[in-house]
Image 1 (spheres, rainbow, N blue to C red):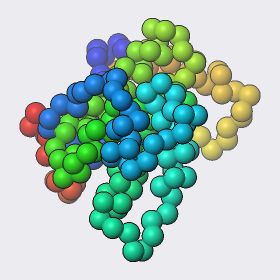
Image 2: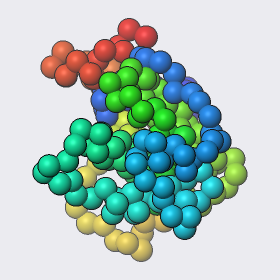
Image 3: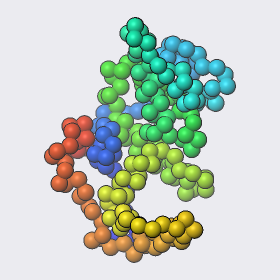
Image 4: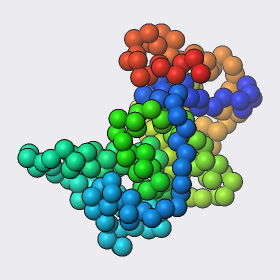
Length: 215
């Protein structure tokens, strides 16, 4: 942009969506015996049609772990918790273009739920979003994946010009409006950017939105 570089930071991720910016890195294997991992951590082996490569169907996952009985034992409750968190990962934080599958490489991080919160999920979320944005613009793919609500809220907080309220929207003019938005960014001045959007609210935010402020 004309004012220089301005991008989403770990601080933005932590404040806007509450994912920890500080913690252990989210790294591991992308290839494993995923059927065995599912059996061990979810207590069930997914049907072959519900797995595509290293990705598991979110529809199947939601249907399989839809309802928990009242007299369920501790281990089953833990498995349902893993399935629920895995759905959140695949459906929002680490969404792919299909929005229908979640990569099973995230499941091992849920093996010990007491340890899961120690990871830098904010860093992983941001890295995933950056990767998806690069794919969009370098590989000319049709859609953008990742936690797009983060991108939208960040733009709303940083650039008030994109948050103008339109009282009347004509669907036939959307294409022209998109070009107009890009033109506005080309003419953007430093005074039109909110450089410290959280300054007035940072002290009132819950601790999990500010723990990584110093990194």
